[in-house]
Length: 457
Image (cartoon, rainbow, N blue to C red; front, side, top):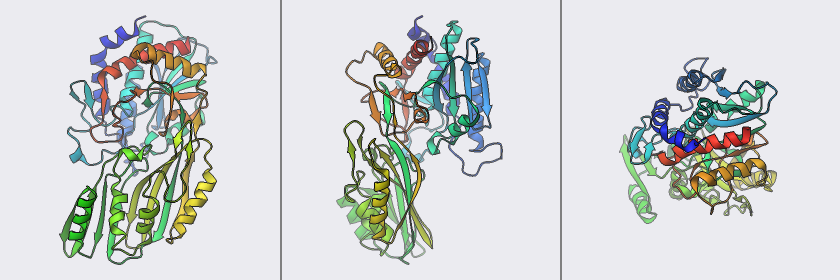
């Protein structure tokens, strides 16, 4: 069977279906429209749409509480047969500043060999490639010895409650891969944890501070509303630090705004943190412990200023994203997200955070903690996926890797992340003007088809 020939033949259909899937603005809704839509109506509609596509293609499908679902190809196997899982998600991160987008984020727009839209590469594009891979096997009557199940969730970007719900009642795959990261294959993922810093508002000259939304994105905007005029000093600060921002005055209040650059939290250095930079300015003019704490100890994404840095030879640096800052008339909160390698002492780090925060009267509270995920890079799973990638991409220079991002793969023991961002390619996940390389997307249909065949034959 020529899997690549099938993929190329069905390119137009693949892109058409992906374009329909992208139309759903499937961002987490914290106040759902109805009880039957736990994460928001658009996510339920998006889930039902792809499950209906699976049903039309002759697969077994199941919707579990409008939170997660699956599309299954079992080739009439006994229910005790082993299962191969393909793990993807339909939720997307917020669009951020719409002015930064060159196209409508929820209308797939082709420009040359790129398809621009939110979710095009994270993760709707890869999900559709996996779906077409399964269709390829079914339409060509290829019999397998494992049940193959595409599991699609709706909350991967905000805690993976969808997969937790799946595991309560559904079967756990014996082996799995998640097309939600990088090629050639990812056998290790850093631990992921979040912390909140809490304190009381101290300086009456500040009315409010607002920056950031979710924990896994570098905030691109930040603003302080205050009663004092610092326009000249602020513009001098922006110029000296080559930053973009402005000041607006209305009814005796001054709003100081700073524009940064969004990036995925797994590597904060790929972005420009508007929150941290605005705190660097504000620390000299406002008597606020939280602002001073952020500027002194959270300014380095490796935590070197707090002497809490850590590095592992195989998985690299501990990284820290200062994700959000919310201040109202009484209280203030800063949230951070860390990505940490194996052999990292989480408890000691937490104690260290508490110590440096206490210098400024700030309290540190631990939130969720997902430990590092690691699969032997010499396992059959990793070797099979790696060799399949090499076969279709003709890339023999790059090796299996570890990452700071978190995928569904970390939920299962024998699971890894596999594709679809190529080595060295621009990483636009979670950023404005997200796009997927169409050639890579089409080849991924062939890669996934071949990988499923090898892993399930």
